[in-house]
Length: 472
Image (cartoon, rainbow, N blue to C red; front, side, top):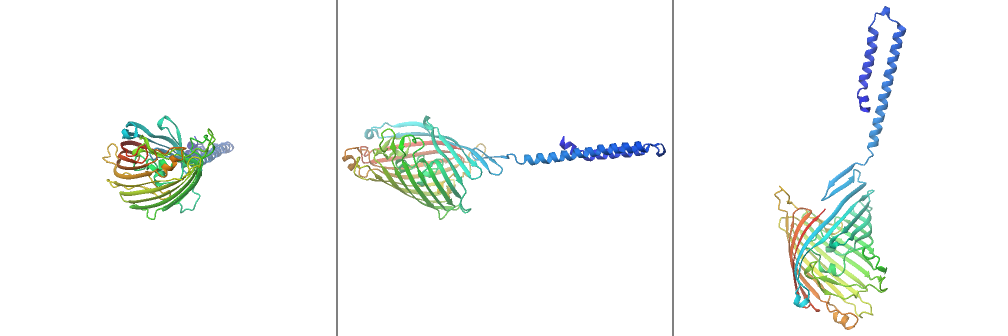
């Protein structure tokens, strides 16, 4: 109605003027009653004035409505593996996220030596669903749950104040919640983007994972620095009278970080204290162990008893990427303090790996310098119906060593615990990865582990693994 009044404003005024002219010319001048004509003209003029007022009111109402509508939420939708919703001003943002990894493992566990039967099984290695987003520009959040194994486990669950640093910094965050303790390039790189099906053995043995705490992340194109102080894991926060604690710091430097070459150097440190158990009122001592053949369904063939009251870990890391070629390695050393009532020694354990990979199809690993991690690879020719693409093909190999043998005899001889499975595991892996798109992949690998020392000395664990994965 408002638009009609505005559009017809000129029509109404023209019609009124025409009526006045017709009345003025319709009768001979000598027969007209001047007073009556004047009255009619005044009446028509009054109607025209009334129409003008209505049109003016309609214009004002339309302008007010337009101004009011401009303040409404202008929803924007983008697709990055899953829908991402945001306001036009960037004030709010929300994205559904998740990943699904389905694995098959066939493992020869050298039963004559280890006593463990062979494995031929499938599993949902990861089945995660969550959300991440932005609230009022600078407040970011992330919440994700893993439903694999018919259990629910909280993974990332934190809120952070971001972008408070200088403009030259790509990342500046203060985080509170459940997130990864900042140690190791291999551990901090997402499971979506690691080269092999599982991470290196020392990341499992020395417990590199998420804990509840507070931390600071800052970084630019060629450097990053993280630090934090942490309590218990999210699934064990009710198990302690006094939480286990950890403090950690990590720094990285990438002198070269461009479209054809990356050089990465990093170092990190962590100190942990065992917590006091609610059930026993004693310290919940740390245990150190890893799975054979670097496959998740394998048993553990090197394993210490519960001995660690506190420990100190040092990690050195390096990587070189040149176009489609990549070399990466890390060394970790763990110094363990054992309570005098358990054993009067302090062993030092260590682990390291070195690997190399090559994208046959010419892709390059994506390095994110502001956090010192590897990210999502951009597939040049993705596979989908009608694309004619062949995806990205990657060949990779790794040598991985974990040594938990130090002072094994002294720990056993003390007579409180036995260190009969404290030994060394040496694993080599060859892998072929097929990235169909940026978000989907198939992985194949063969691996062998040799066990030295302990009751499993001389065992050879051989395994084949496959994975189908998608993330969004």
